[in-house]
Amino acid sequence: MEHPAYRVLDPDRLRRLTQRAAIRPHQGDAKDQRGHIIDASLVVLADGHPRTGDEIWTQARRRHLLAHTQQKDVYVALVGYIERHSGAGRWCAIVQDLDRRFRLNHPIDDWPDPKHALPTRKPVAEAEAIRHELAKTQRGDDATAYELAVCRAFEALGFVVQHIGGHGAPDSMIDAPLGPLAYRVQVECKRAKIHWVLDPDPAEAAHYRERLGAKYSAMVGPAFEQGVNLRDELLAHGVSCWTSEDLEQCLDNAYDPVEMEALFTPGFTRQHIDDVLWERSHGAPKRTAVVCDLLRESAARVQLPSRANPTDAPRLDINAALLLVDGALIALGAHVPCTHADIEAAFRHLTDPLVGEAVYTDATQAAIVFRRTNAP
Figure (cartoon, rainbow, N blue to C red):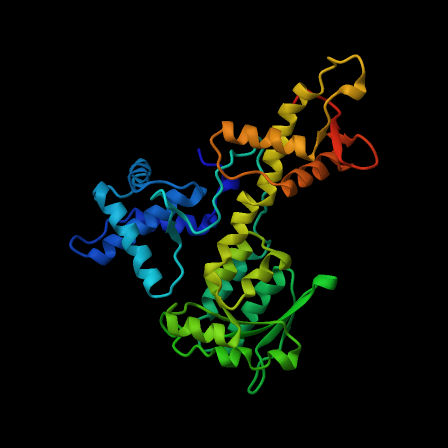
């Protein structure tokens, strides 16, 4: 069973994709059929592991998806999706590697899972109430109500918020209270009558940035047509484009202002928002956990009392640890190597006074020994 700590996609988004993928597409509707396959592929690839088209089809069938889709159609649909999006200059949620396998558009991670689950976060306390408020106001006639709902969302995520509003003024500005890492964002809100925001104006969203002393500008609305024209305008004016769903994902996964700064990069936030979950599940925390697991297993071998003189015992320094971990990863079928930074992070974790599994051998902090050699 897939462990939730190692998903790459937001759990709520994954649920919606699964529901959509389970609906039988209209016969003869090629576009509907392609969308059905893409949804199912996103569900299967949500664990971050690359797969062939045939493997995706097999896994989808096991989840009671793609019941009316032929095996060969999955590869054709995925290649076509990548070609269409790449040709139009649009971001692809799924990419294909040189070995013809498909994966989500994140860095490759073929390391084993940690032996113990990584820390997870619960949704912010007000997530459900704010979700309801955003849905209620984003298509209504009251512009101020939607602005206040967006402000409430950012405030719940840890920002200091000031609603301004009114004619000839920005809707709001938000500050990340991070001391020397603090940053400010000008926020403009756009409502939509039916589906898309019909009048997105990145220039307006950037108009007050310099006057407010803001580092970033953001435009928030129910949904935007994510075409090339709007993308180019966003880049030209230095504006990030958020949907209400993007904000909800941040709330559901308790994103914080440090993680969220990258989401204010100009362009569509949807292209970056899953990167935060990827980093939590497949980035530095996982790499540190796996290196610690492998070093614990090695400790019993390198710390045996087999020598009369302890000074002749091998030292578990950074280079020795790197060799041990890389050898173990290769034996487990991984191709992504360990780095010096990974070893240093593991050493810092293991010797932290609040962890206390290992100690440095001397003041140079170049090598460690484990307090106990029986791995937990």
